[in-house]
Picture 1 (tube, rainbow, N blue to C red):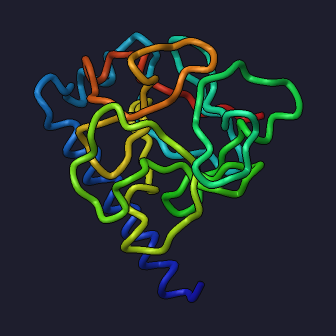
Picture 2 (cartoon, rainbow, N blue to C red):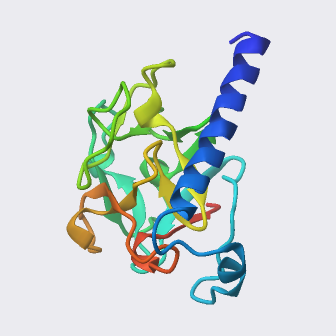
Length: 192
C-alpha cells in the first residue's frame, strides 16, 4: 500500500471513529463527559484498540468472540465462547486500520450485507469475511469507545444475538440499550 493511501485510510478511520462517538453520544440517554467519568459500573472511558492480538471479552458473561468451529472460511459465524488457554487463534483479533482481523483465518469481522453502507438492521449476525478495499469495506470498519464495539452505523453496537449471553450464542449488532451503562453490550480487550 502506498504511503499516501495508508495516510488517507488512517485519516478515514480516525474521522469514522470521531463521527461514531459523536453520533452515539448525541443519542437520547447518552451520557455527558462528566457522567462518563462518574460511571462506576466498569470504569470505562474512551479507548483505542491495543497493539498486537487480543481477546474481545463481554463484561457481563466473560465469554469472548470466537469463530465457530475454528472456521477459516469466509462467512464463518462469530459466536460467544469460553476463553481457551491454548489453541485459541480463532479467538484472537488484531486491529489494522479500522479492521478487526482474526488471527487464525486472517479474515475480518463483518456485518454482512452492508458493503455499500446504509442503515444496519439490528439483529444482523456477524461473520468473518475477506477484507475489501474502500468504498466496499464500510461494513468491516470498527470503532471502540466506552467499552462498546461499533460498526460505521452509530445506532447499533456489538451484542449477543437476542441478548443471549450463553456459550455458543451468535454475536450480532443491536441497538445500544441504556448507553453507556449496559455491561451486557460492553466489551474489554485483553492481551493473551
